[in-house]
Image (cartoon, rainbow, N blue to C red; front, side, top):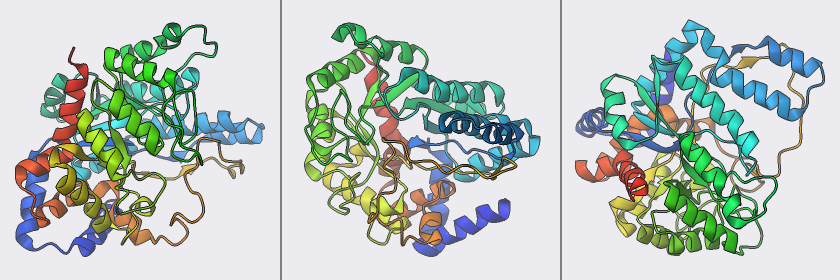
Length: 400
Protein backbone atom coordinates (compact mmCIF):
# COMPACT_ATOMS: atom_id res chain seq x y z
CA UNK A 1 0.00 0.00 0.00
CA UNK A 2 2.87 2.40 0.73
CA UNK A 3 4.00 1.94 -2.88
CA UNK A 4 0.50 2.97 -3.99
CA UNK A 5 0.68 6.05 -1.76
CA UNK A 6 3.97 7.06 -3.39
CA UNK A 7 2.58 6.43 -6.87
CA UNK A 8 -0.32 8.80 -6.18
CA UNK A 9 2.07 11.43 -4.83
CA UNK A 10 4.28 11.17 -7.91
CA UNK A 11 1.28 11.65 -10.21
CA UNK A 12 0.35 14.83 -8.33
CA UNK A 13 3.93 16.12 -8.44
CA UNK A 14 4.12 15.45 -12.18
CA UNK A 15 1.06 17.66 -12.63
CA UNK A 16 2.32 20.51 -10.43
CA UNK A 17 6.03 20.35 -11.30
CA UNK A 18 6.99 22.49 -8.28
CA UNK A 19 10.51 23.81 -7.85
CA UNK A 20 12.39 22.58 -4.79
CA UNK A 21 11.77 25.76 -2.78
CA UNK A 22 7.99 25.76 -3.35
CA UNK A 23 7.75 22.05 -2.61
CA UNK A 24 9.70 22.25 0.61
CA UNK A 25 7.87 25.33 1.85
CA UNK A 26 4.45 23.95 0.92
CA UNK A 27 5.03 20.65 2.71
CA UNK A 28 6.34 22.43 5.82
CA UNK A 29 3.40 24.86 5.84
CA UNK A 30 0.94 21.99 5.46
CA UNK A 31 2.51 20.11 8.37
CA UNK A 32 2.41 23.08 10.74
CA UNK A 33 -1.09 24.34 9.81
CA UNK A 34 -4.50 23.12 11.00
CA UNK A 35 -5.90 21.24 8.01
CA UNK A 36 -9.70 20.86 7.99
CA UNK A 37 -11.40 19.10 5.06
CA UNK A 38 -14.72 20.96 4.64
CA UNK A 39 -16.46 17.74 3.55
CA UNK A 40 -14.91 14.33 3.11
CA UNK A 41 -14.75 10.66 3.94
CA UNK A 42 -12.43 9.06 6.45
CA UNK A 43 -10.45 6.22 4.84
CA UNK A 44 -12.33 2.93 4.75
CA UNK A 45 -10.98 -0.61 4.70
CA UNK A 46 -11.70 -4.01 3.30
CA UNK A 47 -10.85 -7.68 3.53
CA UNK A 48 -12.97 -10.79 3.87
CA UNK A 49 -16.56 -10.07 4.89
CA UNK A 50 -18.38 -13.41 5.18
CA UNK A 51 -21.57 -11.85 6.53
CA UNK A 52 -21.99 -9.99 3.27
CA UNK A 53 -21.81 -13.21 1.31
CA UNK A 54 -24.41 -14.77 3.57
CA UNK A 55 -26.75 -11.82 3.06
CA UNK A 56 -26.34 -11.83 -0.71
CA UNK A 57 -26.84 -15.58 -1.06
CA UNK A 58 -29.79 -15.36 1.33
CA UNK A 59 -31.59 -12.86 -0.91
CA UNK A 60 -31.23 -9.79 1.31
CA UNK A 61 -32.57 -6.48 0.01
CA UNK A 62 -30.40 -3.85 -1.64
CA UNK A 63 -30.59 -1.62 1.44
CA UNK A 64 -29.69 -4.43 3.85
CA UNK A 65 -26.65 -5.34 1.75
CA UNK A 66 -25.63 -1.68 1.45
CA UNK A 67 -25.84 -1.15 5.22
CA UNK A 68 -23.82 -4.28 5.93
CA UNK A 69 -21.17 -3.23 3.41
CA UNK A 70 -20.87 0.25 4.93
CA UNK A 71 -20.68 -1.14 8.45
CA UNK A 72 -17.89 -3.54 7.46
CA UNK A 73 -15.85 -0.91 5.61
CA UNK A 74 -16.25 1.70 8.36
CA UNK A 75 -15.90 -0.51 11.43
CA UNK A 76 -15.72 -4.29 11.04
CA UNK A 77 -12.63 -4.48 8.85
CA UNK A 78 -10.60 -2.66 11.51
CA UNK A 79 -10.63 -5.74 13.71
CA UNK A 80 -7.55 -6.48 11.59
CA UNK A 81 -4.51 -4.73 13.18
CA UNK A 82 -2.86 -4.44 9.76
CA UNK A 83 -5.84 -2.47 8.51
CA UNK A 84 -5.56 -0.09 11.49
CA UNK A 85 -1.88 0.38 10.68
CA UNK A 86 -2.76 1.30 7.10
CA UNK A 87 -5.40 3.71 8.37
CA UNK A 88 -2.87 5.58 10.50
CA UNK A 89 -0.38 5.70 7.64
CA UNK A 90 -2.99 7.15 5.30
CA UNK A 91 -3.89 9.95 7.70
CA UNK A 92 -0.21 10.75 8.26
CA UNK A 93 0.46 10.80 4.52
CA UNK A 94 -2.47 13.15 3.87
CA UNK A 95 -1.69 15.41 6.82
CA UNK A 96 -5.35 16.16 7.52
CA UNK A 97 -6.24 17.09 11.11
CA UNK A 98 -10.04 17.11 10.92
CA UNK A 99 -12.64 15.85 8.52
CA UNK A 100 -16.19 17.14 8.20
CA UNK A 101 -17.35 13.54 8.00
CA UNK A 102 -20.19 12.35 5.80
CA UNK A 103 -22.12 10.56 8.55
CA UNK A 104 -25.77 10.58 7.50
CA UNK A 105 -27.44 8.95 4.51
CA UNK A 106 -28.73 10.98 1.56
CA UNK A 107 -32.31 12.19 2.05
CA UNK A 108 -34.45 13.19 5.01
CA UNK A 109 -35.20 9.84 6.66
CA UNK A 110 -33.99 10.19 10.25
CA UNK A 111 -33.77 6.45 10.88
CA UNK A 112 -31.64 5.91 7.78
CA UNK A 113 -29.39 8.81 8.83
CA UNK A 114 -28.89 7.28 12.27
CA UNK A 115 -27.35 4.17 10.75
CA UNK A 116 -24.33 5.92 9.19
CA UNK A 117 -24.04 8.31 12.14
CA UNK A 118 -23.92 5.33 14.51
CA UNK A 119 -21.17 3.72 12.40
CA UNK A 120 -18.86 6.71 12.58
CA UNK A 121 -19.65 7.35 16.24
CA UNK A 122 -18.70 3.74 16.90
CA UNK A 123 -15.58 4.07 14.73
CA UNK A 124 -14.38 6.96 16.90
CA UNK A 125 -14.92 4.78 19.99
CA UNK A 126 -13.44 1.61 18.54
CA UNK A 127 -10.43 3.31 16.96
CA UNK A 128 -9.61 5.53 19.91
CA UNK A 129 -5.92 5.41 19.02
CA UNK A 130 -6.70 7.11 15.71
CA UNK A 131 -9.85 9.21 16.08
CA UNK A 132 -11.64 11.50 18.46
CA UNK A 133 -15.12 12.79 17.74
CA UNK A 134 -15.35 16.58 18.09
CA UNK A 135 -18.54 18.56 18.63
CA UNK A 136 -17.07 21.97 19.60
CA UNK A 137 -14.19 23.82 17.91
CA UNK A 138 -12.32 24.30 21.19
CA UNK A 139 -11.78 20.53 21.32
CA UNK A 140 -9.77 20.42 18.11
CA UNK A 141 -6.41 21.74 19.33
CA UNK A 142 -6.30 19.20 22.14
CA UNK A 143 -7.13 16.35 19.76
CA UNK A 144 -4.27 17.40 17.50
CA UNK A 145 -1.87 17.69 20.43
CA UNK A 146 -2.65 14.06 21.33
CA UNK A 147 -1.71 12.98 17.82
CA UNK A 148 -5.26 11.96 16.88
CA UNK A 149 -7.52 12.86 13.95
CA UNK A 150 -10.81 14.63 14.57
CA UNK A 151 -14.20 13.73 13.13
CA UNK A 152 -16.70 16.58 12.86
CA UNK A 153 -20.07 15.18 11.80
CA UNK A 154 -22.35 16.22 8.94
CA UNK A 155 -25.42 14.60 7.42
CA UNK A 156 -26.51 14.49 3.79
CA UNK A 157 -29.90 15.90 4.62
CA UNK A 158 -32.06 17.50 7.28
CA UNK A 159 -33.81 14.82 9.39
CA UNK A 160 -37.59 15.15 9.18
CA UNK A 161 -40.33 13.10 10.87
CA UNK A 162 -42.51 10.67 8.92
CA UNK A 163 -45.64 12.41 10.17
CA UNK A 164 -45.60 16.20 10.13
CA UNK A 165 -48.27 17.87 12.26
CA UNK A 166 -46.94 21.40 12.72
CA UNK A 167 -43.91 23.32 11.48
CA UNK A 168 -42.47 23.62 14.97
CA UNK A 169 -42.81 19.93 15.75
CA UNK A 170 -41.34 19.00 12.37
CA UNK A 171 -38.14 20.88 13.24
CA UNK A 172 -37.46 19.01 16.48
CA UNK A 173 -35.15 16.42 14.94
CA UNK A 174 -32.63 19.12 14.04
CA UNK A 175 -32.00 19.59 17.76
CA UNK A 176 -31.92 15.83 18.35
CA UNK A 177 -29.19 15.36 15.75
CA UNK A 178 -27.33 18.41 17.08
CA UNK A 179 -27.23 16.74 20.50
CA UNK A 180 -25.91 13.61 18.79
CA UNK A 181 -23.01 15.66 17.47
CA UNK A 182 -24.09 16.72 13.97
CA UNK A 183 -22.87 20.21 13.09
CA UNK A 184 -23.76 20.59 9.39
CA UNK A 185 -26.65 19.37 7.21
CA UNK A 186 -27.40 19.33 3.47
CA UNK A 187 -30.52 21.33 2.70
CA UNK A 188 -31.26 19.09 -0.28
CA UNK A 189 -29.52 16.16 -1.90
CA UNK A 190 -29.73 16.67 -5.67
CA UNK A 191 -33.51 16.19 -5.79
CA UNK A 192 -36.43 18.33 -4.64
CA UNK A 193 -37.64 17.92 -1.07
CA UNK A 194 -39.86 19.88 1.31
CA UNK A 195 -37.04 22.37 1.89
CA UNK A 196 -36.22 23.32 -1.67
CA UNK A 197 -35.01 22.22 -5.08
CA UNK A 198 -31.84 20.21 -5.58
CA UNK A 199 -29.20 20.89 -8.20
CA UNK A 200 -30.23 17.93 -10.38
CA UNK A 201 -33.83 19.10 -10.88
CA UNK A 202 -34.78 20.54 -14.27
CA UNK A 203 -36.74 23.28 -12.50
CA UNK A 204 -35.12 25.55 -9.94
CA UNK A 205 -37.95 26.77 -7.74
CA UNK A 206 -35.76 27.80 -4.85
CA UNK A 207 -36.45 27.57 -1.13
CA UNK A 208 -39.89 26.70 0.22
CA UNK A 209 -41.63 28.48 3.08
CA UNK A 210 -40.87 25.43 5.21
CA UNK A 211 -37.25 25.63 4.05
CA UNK A 212 -36.95 29.10 5.51
CA UNK A 213 -38.17 27.79 8.86
CA UNK A 214 -35.63 24.96 8.63
CA UNK A 215 -32.75 27.40 8.10
CA UNK A 216 -33.81 29.62 10.98
CA UNK A 217 -34.04 26.58 13.24
CA UNK A 218 -30.56 25.50 12.14
CA UNK A 219 -29.34 29.02 12.93
CA UNK A 220 -30.95 28.86 16.38
CA UNK A 221 -29.64 25.38 17.13
CA UNK A 222 -26.08 25.78 15.84
CA UNK A 223 -26.13 23.65 12.66
CA UNK A 224 -24.50 24.93 9.45
CA UNK A 225 -26.80 24.98 6.38
CA UNK A 226 -24.93 23.29 3.52
CA UNK A 227 -26.16 23.92 -0.04
CA UNK A 228 -23.59 21.80 -1.87
CA UNK A 229 -26.29 19.68 -3.52
CA UNK A 230 -28.92 22.44 -3.77
CA UNK A 231 -30.12 24.30 -6.84
CA UNK A 232 -28.75 27.73 -7.68
CA UNK A 233 -31.89 29.56 -6.55
CA UNK A 234 -32.24 27.44 -3.40
CA UNK A 235 -28.63 28.20 -2.48
CA UNK A 236 -28.99 31.91 -3.20
CA UNK A 237 -32.18 32.27 -1.17
CA UNK A 238 -30.78 30.22 1.71
CA UNK A 239 -27.73 32.49 1.89
CA UNK A 240 -29.89 35.61 1.74
CA UNK A 241 -32.30 34.68 4.54
CA UNK A 242 -29.90 32.88 6.90
CA UNK A 243 -28.83 34.76 10.01
CA UNK A 244 -25.57 32.80 10.15
CA UNK A 245 -23.10 31.54 7.54
CA UNK A 246 -24.33 29.26 4.77
CA UNK A 247 -21.74 27.08 3.08
CA UNK A 248 -21.33 25.12 -0.12
CA UNK A 249 -19.06 22.48 1.34
CA UNK A 250 -17.98 20.62 -1.83
CA UNK A 251 -18.58 22.15 -5.21
CA UNK A 252 -16.92 24.12 -8.02
CA UNK A 253 -16.95 27.59 -9.53
CA UNK A 254 -19.60 27.91 -12.23
CA UNK A 255 -17.49 30.43 -14.12
CA UNK A 256 -15.01 27.62 -14.83
CA UNK A 257 -17.40 24.68 -15.12
CA UNK A 258 -20.94 24.13 -16.39
CA UNK A 259 -21.37 21.02 -14.24
CA UNK A 260 -24.74 20.94 -12.49
CA UNK A 261 -23.01 20.91 -9.09
CA UNK A 262 -21.01 24.12 -9.75
CA UNK A 263 -22.25 27.45 -8.36
CA UNK A 264 -22.65 30.72 -10.24
CA UNK A 265 -20.86 33.92 -9.29
CA UNK A 266 -24.15 35.39 -8.06
CA UNK A 267 -24.65 32.44 -5.72
CA UNK A 268 -21.04 32.52 -4.46
CA UNK A 269 -21.42 36.24 -3.74
CA UNK A 270 -24.54 35.54 -1.67
CA UNK A 271 -22.71 32.79 0.23
CA UNK A 272 -19.87 35.23 0.86
CA UNK A 273 -22.28 37.87 2.19
CA UNK A 274 -23.71 35.30 4.62
CA UNK A 275 -20.21 34.82 6.02
CA UNK A 276 -19.84 31.36 4.52
CA UNK A 277 -17.48 29.72 2.06
CA UNK A 278 -17.47 27.53 -1.03
CA UNK A 279 -15.43 24.35 -0.68
CA UNK A 280 -13.77 23.20 -3.89
CA UNK A 281 -14.10 19.47 -4.42
CA UNK A 282 -11.59 16.93 -5.70
CA UNK A 283 -13.74 15.43 -8.46
CA UNK A 284 -12.25 16.05 -11.95
CA UNK A 285 -15.57 15.87 -13.89
CA UNK A 286 -16.99 18.66 -11.71
CA UNK A 287 -13.89 20.80 -12.26
CA UNK A 288 -13.64 20.37 -16.05
CA UNK A 289 -10.72 22.22 -17.69
CA UNK A 290 -7.66 19.99 -17.42
CA UNK A 291 -9.60 17.87 -14.91
CA UNK A 292 -6.57 17.36 -12.70
CA UNK A 293 -4.93 18.97 -9.68
CA UNK A 294 -4.24 22.15 -11.65
CA UNK A 295 -7.95 22.43 -12.48
CA UNK A 296 -8.79 22.10 -8.79
CA UNK A 297 -6.32 24.87 -7.97
CA UNK A 298 -7.83 27.00 -10.76
CA UNK A 299 -11.19 26.87 -8.97
CA UNK A 300 -9.67 27.68 -5.58
CA UNK A 301 -7.74 30.60 -7.04
CA UNK A 302 -10.75 31.92 -8.94
CA UNK A 303 -12.93 32.06 -5.83
CA UNK A 304 -10.12 33.43 -3.66
CA UNK A 305 -9.18 36.22 -6.07
CA UNK A 306 -12.73 37.26 -6.95
CA UNK A 307 -14.53 36.77 -3.62
CA UNK A 308 -11.67 36.84 -1.09
CA UNK A 309 -9.55 34.22 0.66
CA UNK A 310 -11.97 34.26 3.61
CA UNK A 311 -14.64 32.54 1.52
CA UNK A 312 -12.99 29.51 -0.05
CA UNK A 313 -12.05 26.14 1.41
CA UNK A 314 -11.25 22.62 0.27
CA UNK A 315 -14.05 20.08 0.60
CA UNK A 316 -12.66 17.08 -1.21
CA UNK A 317 -15.85 14.97 -1.25
CA UNK A 318 -13.26 12.26 -1.49
CA UNK A 319 -11.70 9.55 0.60
CA UNK A 320 -9.57 6.46 0.29
CA UNK A 321 -10.33 2.77 0.12
CA UNK A 322 -7.49 0.92 1.83
CA UNK A 323 -8.53 -2.49 0.46
CA UNK A 324 -11.23 -4.19 -1.56
CA UNK A 325 -14.08 -5.98 0.18
CA UNK A 326 -14.33 -9.70 -0.48
CA UNK A 327 -17.90 -10.92 0.06
CA UNK A 328 -17.17 -14.38 -1.29
CA UNK A 329 -19.58 -13.82 -4.18
CA UNK A 330 -20.66 -11.20 -6.72
CA UNK A 331 -22.57 -8.14 -5.54
CA UNK A 332 -26.02 -7.99 -7.16
CA UNK A 333 -26.71 -5.24 -9.70
CA UNK A 334 -29.32 -2.73 -8.50
CA UNK A 335 -30.95 0.40 -9.84
CA UNK A 336 -29.47 3.67 -8.53
CA UNK A 337 -31.37 5.43 -5.76
CA UNK A 338 -33.44 8.47 -6.77
CA UNK A 339 -31.25 10.95 -4.87
CA UNK A 340 -28.01 9.55 -6.23
CA UNK A 341 -27.56 11.19 -9.64
CA UNK A 342 -23.79 10.91 -9.22
CA UNK A 343 -22.75 9.91 -12.72
CA UNK A 344 -25.15 11.29 -15.36
CA UNK A 345 -23.96 10.87 -18.97
CA UNK A 346 -22.07 13.73 -20.52
CA UNK A 347 -20.49 15.07 -17.30
CA UNK A 348 -17.00 13.78 -18.01
CA UNK A 349 -16.92 10.47 -16.20
CA UNK A 350 -16.78 8.54 -19.47
CA UNK A 351 -13.42 9.93 -20.62
CA UNK A 352 -11.64 10.65 -17.34
CA UNK A 353 -8.24 8.99 -16.88
CA UNK A 354 -7.01 7.32 -13.68
CA UNK A 355 -4.15 9.81 -13.57
CA UNK A 356 -6.53 12.78 -13.47
CA UNK A 357 -8.35 11.33 -10.49
CA UNK A 358 -5.12 10.25 -8.76
CA UNK A 359 -3.67 13.75 -9.06
CA UNK A 360 -6.43 15.11 -6.77
CA UNK A 361 -6.57 12.01 -4.56
CA UNK A 362 -7.26 12.65 -0.86
CA UNK A 363 -3.72 11.43 -0.11
CA UNK A 364 -2.38 14.40 -2.07
CA UNK A 365 -3.77 16.97 0.38
CA UNK A 366 -0.19 18.28 1.04
CA UNK A 367 0.13 19.03 -2.66
CA UNK A 368 -2.97 21.24 -2.54
CA UNK A 369 -0.93 23.41 -0.18
CA UNK A 370 2.16 23.21 -2.39
CA UNK A 371 0.04 24.31 -5.37
CA UNK A 372 -1.25 27.34 -3.46
CA UNK A 373 2.35 28.31 -2.64
CA UNK A 374 3.18 28.07 -6.35
CA UNK A 375 0.30 30.40 -7.17
CA UNK A 376 1.60 33.15 -4.93
CA UNK A 377 -0.74 32.98 -1.94
CA UNK A 378 0.77 34.08 1.35
CA UNK A 379 1.13 31.68 4.28
CA UNK A 380 -1.72 33.37 6.16
CA UNK A 381 -3.99 33.15 3.11
CA UNK A 382 -3.17 29.48 2.64
CA UNK A 383 -3.88 28.70 6.29
CA UNK A 384 -7.36 30.17 5.83
CA UNK A 385 -8.02 28.15 2.67
CA UNK A 386 -6.86 24.77 4.03
CA UNK A 387 -8.65 24.99 7.36
CA UNK A 388 -8.96 28.42 8.91
CA UNK A 389 -12.17 29.38 7.12
CA UNK A 390 -13.90 26.19 8.22
CA UNK A 391 -12.78 26.81 11.81
CA UNK A 392 -14.18 30.34 11.64
CA UNK A 393 -17.58 29.21 10.34
CA UNK A 394 -18.04 26.39 12.86
CA UNK A 395 -17.19 28.87 15.63
CA UNK A 396 -19.52 31.62 14.37
CA UNK A 397 -22.37 29.17 13.89
CA UNK A 398 -22.31 28.17 17.57
CA UNK A 399 -22.26 31.76 18.81
CA UNK A 400 -25.55 32.99 20.30
